[in-house]
Image (tube, rainbow over the protein chains, first blue to last red):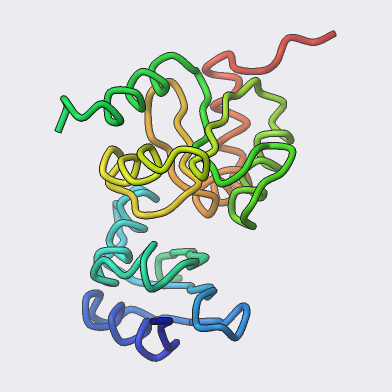
Length: 77
Length: 112
């Protein structure tokens, strides 16, 4: 069951309070998205840890319902 | 977990190769955009690498996700250590970190 952009955004926002999240639908099929997440909580986290935090926010959907999520993370300027 | 045969096969592969990419398809015929992006980066780095087509080996395809605690493919390992998927490879490449790692770890392909 493909996911909606809002669903992805809400799940990340719930787990990463205060994060700025931009979701882009790459293919219009509910299966290929790009997400850019800016969150102060990433401070001191390795790239792997940051991505794992976002994957955890998606509660196991990653690699399942959500086939492809191109993810970039950043700290607030 | 460690006794799972697929887990042991992955562990052996990861330890036996300085650079190994678990991907969908092969370097010549990647079967997914993220895997082809990972291959393009490795080719730019001019490093010798091993690749494993998880589409040909469902046991590895499932177990690799537990092995690295990472839900997606491709997965890159350098000197036995999990580095990440194509997004992290791209970020590291753009930051010059992969190029530095190739030098530091002496991974560049021999010339000629």
